[in-house]
Image 1 (cartoon, rainbow, N blue to C red):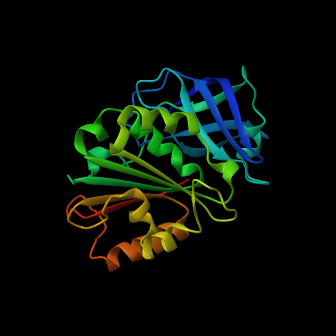
Image 2: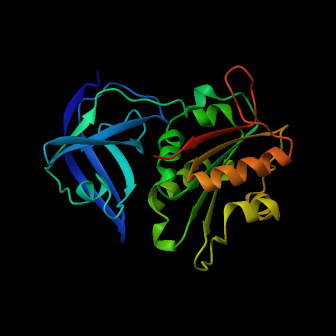
Length: 247
């Protein structure tokens, strides 16, 4: 049976129209970067819960999740309405296997995200392990509009700390932005723009790819990677890319 703890909202960030993050304090068990928790509220006499990946690294005192407010959704509009001091239920134990400990060794790591799936990579990148294991790390973030490119300060800090070892590639699909690619991840992968702008090869011999976000992107990019001779990673059959449906 799931154990619930009472957490308190400490801060809310409102990035754009329907895009939010909340930071909260709760005495949860330790977790591994890449895992997710579950948040819940009492709604009409029922405890309504949904999974959310941690944005914060395990060493941070405050927990953080990043989410879109889904119109008429069962929980997200209520989360978006929370303010500092409000209470929320948090699962005591984290879950999930979208972690670096599950990956085989490779030279380069590509982290590809759509929307709020960016958060899980920020949790991982703000630990020591990725920088110990990989020579180059490429973070690709695809959104519709520029105001959905969240966590700019945190990404700037990673650039400052790791220099040429870290590449950040924003992609906007619905508007042009000077410092971003335009379109969708699949097109940028197939026409070579992704590798050209990163200056990093994406090959079975040198790369492992993590995919997190909407299922359409995961299906399309998985197929494109397979066409390059890459296969999905499984515990008993090491491969070249790992996927996570973002909740």
